[in-house]
Amino acid sequence: MTRNNVLKKIGLISKELNLPIYVIRFWEKKINILKPIRKPGGTRYYSSNQMQILKEIKFLLQKKKYSIEGVNLYFKEKNKSNVQSKKKVIINEIEDLIVEIRNTISNGA
Image (cartoon, rainbow, N blue to C red; front, side, top):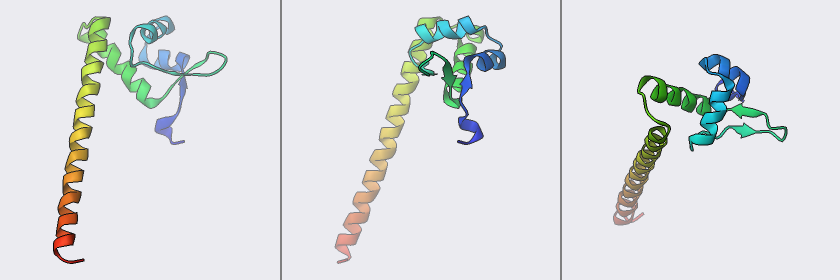
């Protein structure tokens, strides 16, 4: 596991983000995209991706003054946009493959 993929406990995340643990737990319940890894004993672990999401949530709530519902809508739209971008990339790759196949067939190979 690389340094970037280290899992961190909620206490460490709380200190790094300067947020009380109860706030992070509240966000877990209310914000759909926030899904830490939970061990059998209930300990929460956050990946670097989840840490980035927490930073973004903090920014949206505290600096941009979004509501919880607004944060959920923001991530829903962001996810939809990411899916559309990925679809466009895949379609472009398929179109390129079709051109390559046609060129190969027309060259008699």
